Length: 441
Image 1 (cartoon, rainbow, N blue to C red):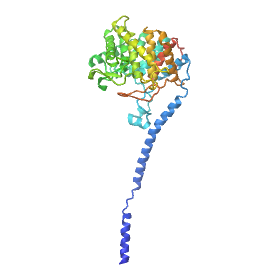
Image 2: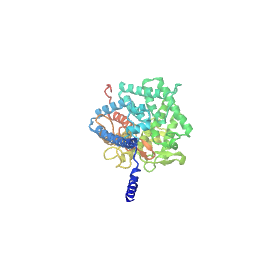
Image 3: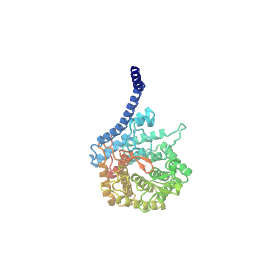
Image 4: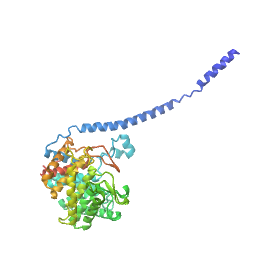
């Protein structure tokens, strides 16, 4: 009996071990695979960001090595000409995008592999504006051909199957300035037709929106952004003056006047990013945003330049622009440039804000709002600061990233067509001499 009891006891003791669960080998494989996939995904996420940072650091070797003014214009202009084939995307994130993220975002292999396609937005339009200014001064046929190719591609891309030009977004209309430049230069009627269509687009948008134009229609609650002032007002004013279309001039003046009234701080003279008509024209976020101040300054100076001397509207805008000159000079930093926030000297240097504001100062002297002697030294300091932030191949670096939402701008500073295009205009005006005609390829 004792032997039987021992046996029973042994069986009872062994029973739990006999019931222990052992996973199937295939289950172990699936668990391990999932773990490896998770580990690999994290590695790609981290590695993509690290790769981007290392590449940027290597690309920035040789910053500030181009110091001769003529060489600086030549190299930066060559980069801009190449970018007509595809500009670098403005950063819309605070870190590098990994391949996995691109797959999840685009879901289209062709879109994933396509590198920086043209979108004909304000980025490319600013680049085209800068090279148009250079071409107007130099008469360079290579530049003219490049602008014609870019504008033709823009018109082809936005022409519907019934042959009508259709703009997708309001900022694409900024290309109208280059269209007008080509019309004056070549006398080709297709550019007149395109200019008519762009002007009509703005006029119809204003009627639908109650007199002024929101930046993105119903999105962003119909906010009137400061960016739009440089994107539409100079074109409309120039178009209206060229073809005796007072309604186009009136719209440019109305858009600008409304923003000065509701979107510009009375104490500092600096703009907010936007104002909201739906809440009693309340100013919206970020007073003195660097590039936003540049958009405001360009829209103001290039619009008043198209208005008749002695007119009431021009006199009003001249007074506003003269005050803005004083404000911009007061907030110029020790390094010669301006940052992402004009009023805070410790904000990060922004090459797009600096290039925009130097252009404004140059144009203010051309419109005889300020003596050249007053802005000569500030302009020189600003140009030297831009050289300090330009790569050895002529790429202007350290432009603030793109808009990510209200009060959110990407903090990844990198090359952009905003900086490159306006820098070309700045250096052209600074040198005021023809650029040697040669191939840019």
